[in-house]
Amino acid sequence: MTSSHLPRYQQIAAELAAQLDNGDYPPGSRLPAVRQLAARHGVNNLTALAAYRLLEQQHKVEARARAGFFAPQPIGQSTTSHASAQPLPSAAALVDLNSRMSTLLLLADDRIPLQLHMAEAAPALYPSSELARRLQQTLARQPELIGAHLPGNTQRRLTIALQQLAQQRGMALRADGILPCHGITEGISLALRHLTRPGDTVAVETPVYFGLLQTLQGLGLKALEIPCTPDQGISLPALEFALRHGPPVRCLVCVPNFQNPTGGLMPDDSKRALLQLARRHDISIIEDDVFGDLYYGNERPTPIKAWDRDGEVIYCSSFTKSYAPSFRLGWVAGGRHHEALARLQASSTLAVSPLLQAVLADVLESGDYQRTSQRIRQQLAAQMHATADAVLRHFPRGTRVRKPLGGMLLWVECPEGSDTNQLLQQALHEGISFAPGLVFSAEPRFGHCLRISCGQPFTPQLDAALTTLGRLLSIQLVY
Image 1 (tube, one colour):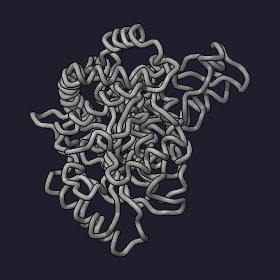
Image 2 (spheres, one colour):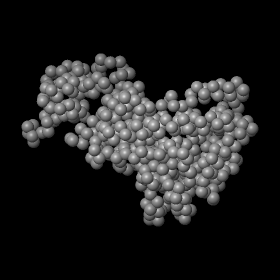
Image 3 (cartoon, helix red, strand yellow):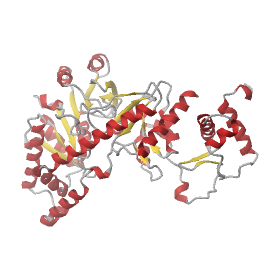
Image 4 (cartoon, helix red, strand yellow):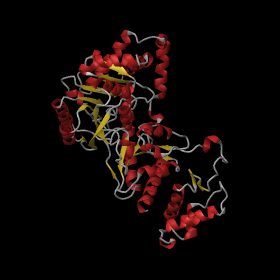
């Protein structure tokens, strides 16, 4: 194809590449602004930007957040400090299941001011000062907690407080059947270690939280992905078909309340039906209820565990999302599996921080947890609605968003043909991060989807960032 028959943005890119090869722009020099390039060639800004993005993909120009495009530096040279010269994380690494968690954690880079990739809320939303005060008071009252196991009376206070919390959620649990743990991840890991052996198959929702995929891989387990929708949660017909005709399944891990990443809430009738289905096929359910307390309505959704009469559901909950992220405490109600889970924990982490457990007992008994989580969820609800509305305003026609009824995650289905992994790489150079859809499956699925955290206040800067994402996606779909 001759150059005259190429799309206009490719013609502009080819001309600019020739100028770079001829040395018209010295290494490290700033290239014409997008508006200048557009005016020079008589095209609109989107066409000029598309030319720059093509050259960026070919590594012929460098994009710098809020600065523009530059002629590349020769290898080994830099006009900036070593720290600022370090490349941004590559979205390409997210294709590898082994690197997904570590790569997404790397996106917490101070060169990326709008970080929307992790399921986290703004630090100001959490009770930092109150928690610091409680920690100081507890240490002053019981300094021995630094170097001792949790006293028996404090342990009883905590488990009774957790028992009462469970009762508020519709679960009748014995206090001595509750196991505190280091957050939701340890709880699920303990349950998987107890129920499975390397090589076993575990049923999970899809799209599925990428951290669970890596946990399964680390334990040598296989994931059988069952479709999940924001309206109904995990598909019961698909699960039953898989249990009848697929490989033997040892257990199911699911998030029925505000699923990660879709935000889906499973109806109560479906929860009961899921429990009956699991009984018929003799499989245990590991229930992840980390987002359950972040409901936006008047009533907290009921866990599956509330209908469990056989002690077969292993219920896992945590305070990291609804009270304080650094407060790495969770708890497990294992039913008939409790003793086995306690032995596994003793053989690995031995004990949960006595200091944090003592503080948690105070927080629960005082009612502070209920008041704090109520304030957090009210703020999250406002942020969720504003963010979802902005996505629908700024993203291309055909974008689909369903506002969840709780949690802090917004699942966005972009028009077919979208490549959100490529979009992420472009967005990083604009100082924006998000989680692309492909990280939420072990298979190459959901490449046109993305997950945005709504934990940040909705500001003009966030609105501008979503405008940028929509513009970049529109360019991608055109070309």
